[in-house]
Length: 203
Image (cartoon, rainbow, N blue to C red; front, side, top):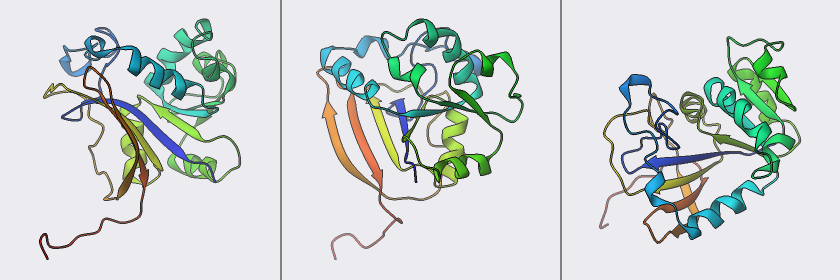
């Protein structure tokens, strides 16, 4: 059984849209692309570098996959694993023969939720999900996320694509690791921990 870890940069109000640059994703009239840029520092860089060293396969939504397929084959010196690991693109519209799929080595197409569930049951490297807001919401809705690796930035944006939306299943998680960078980014790792428990405060 493979584990699925969602890696996401989010604001305090849960927005994950276009963290890397102004032109990354302007859909919905989003005006704050690149909102993570002012918060980078040496501590954060070391954390990210350690994450990128982890052997992994990758599950990506169509838009994230298409953008990465243009960029990472030429920048493998920074993240060798992204080219070496298998990239699974989740899309109902793409075909196995489409250039975006065949043009990036070690890439494969998953057409439906059943294919993701079947992949999770196979033997192999654990699976990382980056970006891919709709895909992440689908995984959360069907309780397929084993771990959340969140980078929470000290900023509110109000509007934009959010990490938790569209029917997230109730689920408990355990905090297994956390760091606060000098510029206020909370890097927190949460592992799935069964059902939600309730009670009365003070009893």
